[in-house]
Picture 1 (cartoon, one colour):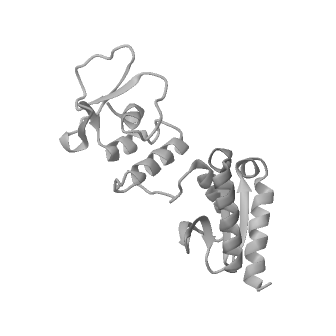
Picture 2: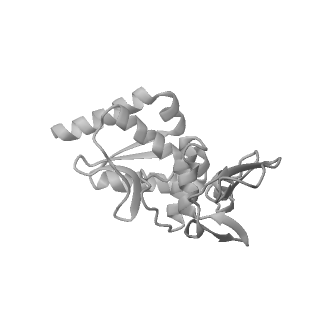
Length: 201
């Protein structure tokens, strides 16, 4: 197994409807079969393959390399994050340091609008924050309904914000809808906070 089928087997991605992807280390033989997407990869050798649940499969490293161009970019980023979460060290594969598609969407915003680069997922005291501009003492948290709808998460968010403000940080919190539907307002709010801090106001 390889490509998105291998990613599902490794639990890097959810199963994707369609044929099963299989790679073979040859350029000939093995006629294509219905329900199988056959990839002929002469460079595929033992170091790039292993077994999971007794099923021959490409390694996590090779699987992620194969995903590029096979699935949308956000799914490649998701697979990379899952691999890192499993403690897999990936060689030659760049990670944006985010833990979710929403965090990646926020990073895309700041890149497009040339805002200063923040640190991602860093600790301030006992809290881990999504984005930090350390020299400006500005924190941004991005929230999805899925992970912030419970009463415990709600209380934790407010305790975090109060503690950070008492430490002298400006805390901005944006929802998934705001980032997707009002990106201009989000960018303006962040730029204003960074500008105010830079000017000492």
